[in-house]
Structures are given as structure tokens and as C-alpha cells.
Image (cartoon, rainbow, N blue to C red):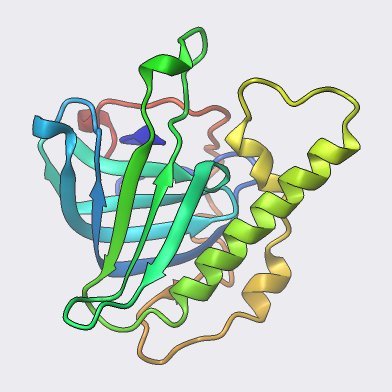
Length: 208
């Protein structure tokens, strides 16, 4: 994870090298725990989810304390589950491992639990794409590990998921008319030459 990743003034996440945004979904509520700098470490906010071939980025409609956005690398997600409770809204819950900064011990960083609640409209477009992307990222990672003669590095680089092919997935995605998810058939910021190369958090006041 990365707290408050870099954003454009319109709230769109600044992309990494070779990153392709797949969709944006408004009207969701996002919950995450163990967030530094927030009272109790638990944050709940409403906003927009952006999904790419590398990560999921939640951008809050209004900042919650120092919390503006949260970056979830797909390669670090595990235990994800789609829930359809009878009396509450559909949601995806799971856990994500933190992105440990260089030269810092991993023991100082805890696993986060997250939840995406679909408060407005259906989720028939978002959910299949989310799970298909997670599956593709994991499959590509396994293939890379098997093809390499080197032992797995102690810290996996979440950006290696950028090589996951997603074009075919986007072209054949099912579009649920009740789901307000926007699929990006073209990248939303083609004019921008700004590309991030590493995972680095940025203070909230510089994010938007």
C-alpha cells in the first residue's frame, strides 16, 4: 500500500511507467485500517476507485484528516472475497501487504484490511474485472518466478505487474447496465508525460 499517492489536480492518479488504467468507479465507500497519522488508524471515506494493471487507487471525495487517497498494489492483495449480505450493500473485502520503503525493516509495517462497499448502483462490471485482474497478475508473477533461475527476492516489486496483458480483458469485459463503472477504452491522460517510477508516499497537501 501507499498512503496519499500522487494525483493530478482532477483527482486522477499519476500513472507509473507502463501502467494502464482499466476503469473508474464512483459512489463507493472505502474502509482501511492501520493508516498512519489518523486517529485509531481506521479510515472510512466515500469517493472513487481507479483500477489499473498494477494497482487499485481509492481517491476520497473529501479528505479525512490527512487521508486523501490510498494505493493498493494488486500483487500484494490476498484473502479477497465478494460479499452479498442480505441487509447491507454488496462489498469486496480483503487484505493487502504494505509496500516497505527501501532500507526499512518489514517488521515495522503491518498488513492492512480493506473493504470496498458499493453504495450506489450495481457492481456487475467492477467485480469480474477486479478478480480477473488479480488472477492475471498472480499468474504472470508465478510464470516470472518459474522462468527465473534466481531465488525470489525478499521484497517483490509491485510494479512488475505492469507486464500483465489487459487489452483482451478490457475488450471482452461484461458491461452491467446497473453498474456506473467507467471502462477506459483509451487512457484518460494521454497528453501527460509524467510517469512515476517508484512507490513513494507524498504528504496529503501535495497530492491534489
